Length: 231
Image 1 (cartoon, rainbow, N blue to C red):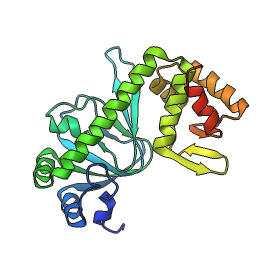
Image 2: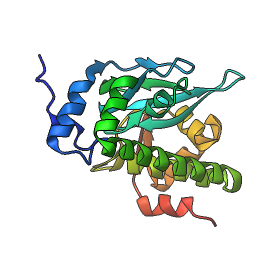
Image 3: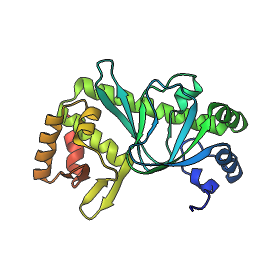
Image 4: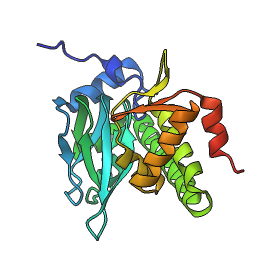
């Protein structure tokens, strides 16, 4: 049986990083911790927002379904990040599915419990607002890229964001430390599977990347950064 979590589990979380140990202990005690298997739907698009979540370990993908039935990966959630929290606190339905990519560990709270924590510790509310603001700026950047950049630049920018979020240095280069398909990459870059596959194949040949099934390694960061810049 796994040992109980300590308050240190929330030390690096975006909502709780500014709390002292006693406050983190209160926050942890007010929530529920659970392990989630790969492919688990944590919540579905359109479900009532009744819970606030922080990922402790693993990876979650946020997938939105459009009116025509097509789907897009909006972003990947990593350890320490909140998800579903803003919608829940606003009394809104969840705007997308949250699905585990690998086995994951999370802590979640009812809306009432989270509001009580925020009233007791304003730093939690400030952390939540800062995280939401960061994602808004990221989304604005992505919208701007869609409007003015060529597809190769958008793919490069998408990879750079993934490296920043989940890059792990290995002997072969910087590996994105969770499985990601070329289809998912194409959705995030606003491209097509064919274009992403062709582009990665070209970059593999040039030594910029080294991709395999569901794994992407950046072998030359300088070259990838240059590809993201305007010609």
